[in-house]
Image (cartoon, rainbow, N blue to C red):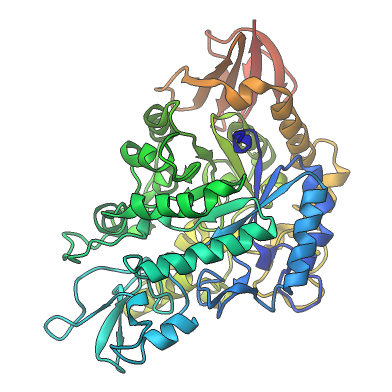
Length: 544
């Protein structure tokens, strides 16, 4: 089978926030169907849908109560079938989110599991007795607090690396693995084109469940939660039993996967995954206290991470390139300048994404330069992580205004507010009250405004995807960083057979001299060509 997934541009849709079609304030499948022409016009090859399964929505759909049903808020299975058909009819593909580290506590398996210690489903989850009147160990869940939930019915604790309503599945149990394999086959037989596998590195647990030397979540992930003793056996088993029989793509989310371990997951002959979303650059500004302990980073820090991964993966593996998604802040607000140079930096960052070595993944709204949002009140934030954070600040008598500022920078709702279609009251997302407020800047940043402006980020993005399709060197070429130590310019070459291109990105508000090593013919960029490198400018040169 051809490695078609190396040539594509991915586009992530967060269904709850993309387009409401029935006036309930929640995005849905029919809303996506109604926008397929728009998505296709972007030059997108593959859509990744965040979870649309039945769920109590404790963690916005990542707590699944039925893997075989569409959540009624999103529509019906008939709507899904029509969506899939519409995507394929336009020459695009679709991958689904596979969330199998945990289920909802309202899943039938867990409802049975908690009834008694001898229930047939007991071993579908991880149950342990307490230690000295408390949890089995000091592990912490991702959103703060103990990773163990106490259940009075059987006087034992269950493991939940995420919220209390997301109990971890016991992958040591072959019955659990068979259930997941059956689910994989169900969706692949429907004709989907693969899976984005949520926190796939966490499936295999350390069976002695030791206490940790640190309760920092990144330390816990790398030293305790990820890369467990049977992780490769479990992933390989999915491949051997199900996935290898379909011409599909798999990309795993990889918390705790270091670059040194990457090719154990994605190496050509490993028969596990095609790619991973590595997260090192996504935690680049996280301090010892976690993501809301915000630290500054330099461009050289970003280069070191991305170059390190490129070198470690080499020709044996393949990377997925992204700068934001449903879990991380808007890329133009984090890596660009979302004020004075929003347009220029959004164009540059999109170009950076589509010219790195790997498969680029664009988050919905990045094609128009959507930014982080700054809500005035804690209650405007809907994410479970945000709620837990504000509650923790209150419990410690912390400063809520400082907490809000931290949330404005790092909160996940920054990327979960509705897609901005036009300048109407709710940005064209819904006729009624949206499930979460829209970003007030939708009056100036929206698709309608962008369509009417020939110099918009949107029109540039369409030219960019076509430019990538027209130049094999950008899809297949080797990568070389031409100046690893420069703190404002990120420059690299791509070379394939007898073709070579240089990409010069200015990651600053300053006008700079063009590096002396630059040569060739100017072929693409976000300004008119000139001898200087203007703020947030990108220039691409073809070298004979």
